[in-house]
Every structure is written in structure tokens, then in C-alpha cells.
Length: 374
Image (cartoon, rainbow, N blue to C red; front, top):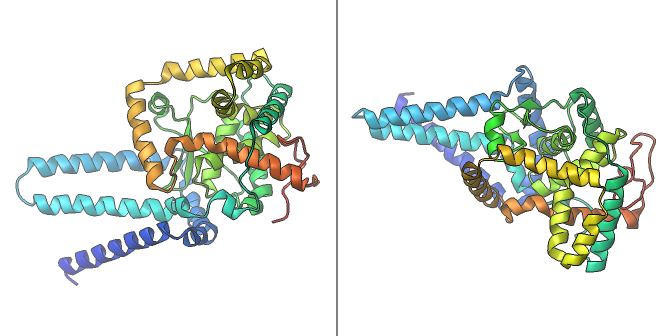
């Protein structure tokens, strides 16, 4: 087989892979089959490999690949001759990166949505329903307040792993590995400039956390990114699982982290839905320590944020989400409130009982709950 024949075969295989990705994009059932049966095998293999390294090999790969492509492109422009072939090589390499991204994790974007996978229906609610929800949330936020304190990462990891193990069948998530161990971003300061506290590294099934996270954020960001590791692509859904897992922990600091992480999303909805005087009233019922913690957190990240770079990143990521069946783009993060309201109604109607295995804490609806049989 000569070089030309090998190139034709490679191009044919690449095009078939891209066509398969486009097919799955339009058939959620195919995406769900991938998420439940194929992704767990791929994730196990890639995680076993990436766990051999104490640093984020996904970050290293992206840095080296980006530098290599840029250098090769400059060489192509600088040197005369064979430019067409060199540009073809770049396109071929990018094509395989595209395929790797989707086959390794990205096809989770095309699975069935949260409501289709569960017995939970979207909640319809009135202004009074929302005010009751808000009052209940604030009561639990106040009651669960804990001063900021860094917990040992191994303790957080085990609590989050246990939580996801208990709920994996209900929400059709990948079984968590025996150890959920995140990697630290290699460029934490740079990501702080664009407001990124964590992200899923799809190429080697790593989830990465910003080393500059505050103690009250660490458990909930850990749980959010762990949800992505377990096959969740929706940001709202990952926020919901982070809240659910954290607020049912036996460790007070982790419970507070879960309630604290959704505070901005819930108050944002409240400010839009309620008259100004009612919003100010609810705001006044939050403990001063929590309001101070929230203000301190905003100021902390604002000092690190670069508006120019941040706007570019937000624009690109917004387009990326919309191109992957997250139609609301960056607004998807705040759609966690709808999931919380739906969960509140589901919990109040089903009233599942606590099991010795889960020892779950109170939910936002006030019921003691454990993972219901799926």
C-alpha cells in the first residue's frame, strides 16, 4: 500500500466518523446509548491512563497541539512549495481532534435531556409558588451556614463519590470510579481572568479545578465538574446534581457549599420575577454573614477577571454550547432554578423515605429523601 492509498483510507475513515457524529447529533436515542453503554468504557480506559500522571495531561496536550499547529502554519506561510499539502495536513489533524473530542466525551451533548431520562416533569409555577420556594431556600441557606474552611480534598472526593453512587441509577449517570480525583488546571490564573473555576477535559476524561477556588466553593465546583465526568453535558443539570449531592452530605461545610453555589442563580431569578420591594424583603432575610460571604466572593473573582478576555471567552463558549444542542447557551447555567423547582414538586409528591445506605440530609422541599428506585 503506497502513501497515496493510505491517505485515501485515512480520509475515508475520518469522513465516516464525522458522518456518524452528525447522525448521533440528530437522534437522542443514539446519544443515550453512547452515554450509557459506550462512554463508560471509554471513560474507564482514558481515566486509567490519565491517572498515571499527577498533572493535567489534557492541558498539556492542548498546549502542545496548539503550539504545534501554530508553528506548522507559520512554517507553511513562510516556506514556498507544498503549501497545499501542509494546509491539508493541518485540516486532517484538526479533523481527528474533532472526532476524538466527540467520541471521548462530546457525544454526551446529544443524549436525551434530564426530563426525558427521569420520571420528573418540568414544573409550572405561579408567583406564589416561587415565593414559597424562595422562602424555603433562604431558611435552609441560613440554617446551614458554615464559616469558610478548606476540607481535605480526599474527604470532599469521597463524599461526592458516595453521593453520585447513590443517585447514578435514578439519573442514568456513569458509575463513579473508586476514586474521584480532579486535576489542577495548569493555567489557573489565566482561567481566573475569564471566570472559569473548573472544566471537563474531554480528551483524557479529566475534570480540572482552578487552584484559586475559595473554600466555600471547592465542594460544589468539585461536584459540578464530577457530573460532567459522569456523562452530564448540561450546565444546569450539573449545577442541580452539585446542589443535590452537596446538600445531602453529612459534612456541614459541604452542605453549605451546595446551597451557596445556587444562591446567585436563585436571587437572579427572584430579582427578575418579583417586584423590587418584595425582592428587597427576601434579600433582607438572608443572614448578614452569608451576604458578606457572597459579596466577598464576587469581589475576589472580580479582581482576577479581565473583561476583554472574558468577553471573548464568553462569546466563544456561548456559540459552542448552542452548537451542541444547549440552545440557551450560557444562560443554561441559571436554568438550574427550573430543575430545583421541578425537584421540589417531585419530592413533595413522591415523599421517598430515607435509607440506611444513603443517610441523606433534608432536601430543599423539607423531605428526608434517598435515591428512589429507578
